[in-house]
Image (tube, rainbow, N blue to C red; front, side, top):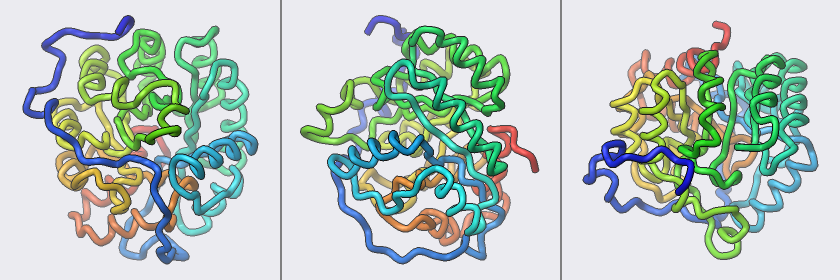
Length: 320
């Protein structure tokens, strides 16, 4: 593919790259599980590092897609309600994420999320559509608004993580020690009409070997891959052991909802590089399901504190 990094020595070991993954394909149904009224008592301070917000009309469009091709959304809450739901239940801070699905949206979306974060006293990152006109100006404006990094989504934007159009974005974030959160994993992948609704097949444009190339090319870039890199857990475990500039978040992968293999070896491999995230409000199960899974895992106290809050504070530069 034109515009990507690529040499044979950038690839993962063949024993990892050739491993057949388990499936996390869509669509899927909802879980009728009970929800708690507070963060579990046996968890330390909790920061949710993966919370989605959009302007109302974009939220409506996202939910229509999920209802048809993904899973039933349990919490159809708009942006202010999203923040209030989590913070009123004991989540100490949230990191608000969003993404532009076409050129021309990022500026207004960044202004929206910056104002929302300031109003609620929480954290937010910006976005940009890869390669759009004024890409660098949009990035600079996002940082000037106080946004604490950038969010990209390979599935929605149809651009591989190692596409050259993103190199100036990576360089700008690395210069400021701000993270890029990018959905670079292959899953969850819809089937049939859902797959046709995306600009590219995630199994074609995504893969751990692409992430490896970016980590090598930008060794000072803080790159965060959500969903523990699903469905390539063994590959991402290898990457996070080899690269200190790679971070992963747990989003949806500890809930027992997908058939994507065992995520815990990835979590336990580098507890100093894994963040708790929920994907709220776009969930098919209780908002606290993954928080309860973390509490039940009985991780060492230091590891649990890092997963729940410490790593997010380090990555996004949050106050103590």
